[in-house]
Length: 72
Image 1: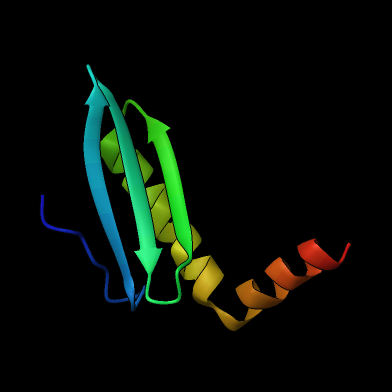
Image 2: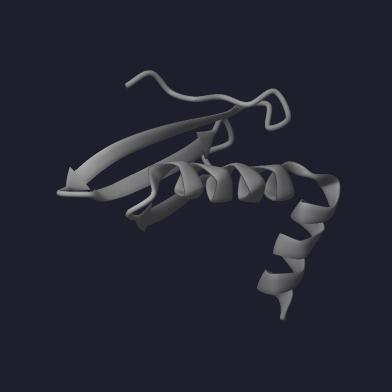
């Protein structure tokens, strides 16, 4: 399946695959090598979750939140 992209998450691509009967994995990745992965039974809900996380990670505040988690 062709990767899915969103205009509000530039640089991110998302792939959905059925890995077992009615079990899906959605993986998002960006040019910087960051990845997001979700596994479950609703591929479109998983895609939505990955999309939201990608937007959060890519925002200036998201980068600060990640740094804070690693500093503590």
